[in-house]
Length: 159
Image (cartoon, rainbow, N blue to C red; front, side, top):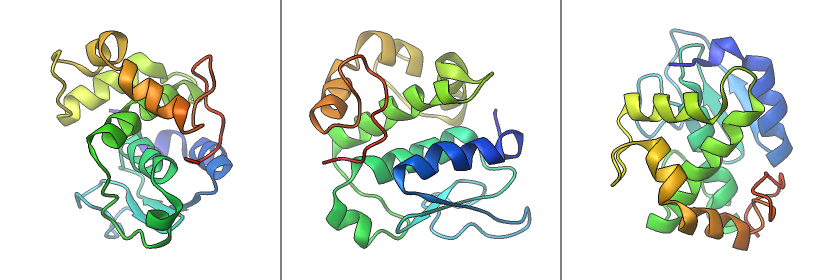
């Protein structure tokens, strides 16, 4: 599993494009705003928290929630991003797309890490879902201005 300590500076450069403040904390510290606890990333407002052992998939997933939620929800965000089924699918799709911003990671590795963590998809794997069943998630991201027509990040949050 790819961990934050492998790419801390790049995490900051990528996620700051969305207006997220990346806060790396010490290895022994509890992560503020973490929904799952343990080493999983946390969100409070526009700040994303992670430790050296936080999986990159967790950071990108929580960042995806920040990008995909409404401005009203962002303003009161503390740990639980909420959202509906369609938004959750969009978040998963976006985290896979964002993995391409990390040299040596990419979509395949992200899907493998998602599967190892326990994400569940009807087709049995994140890659199968992304390749064959995620058109609705992609459309959601397109319609909210998060992806462009070619499927690349626009670096804009949900409009």
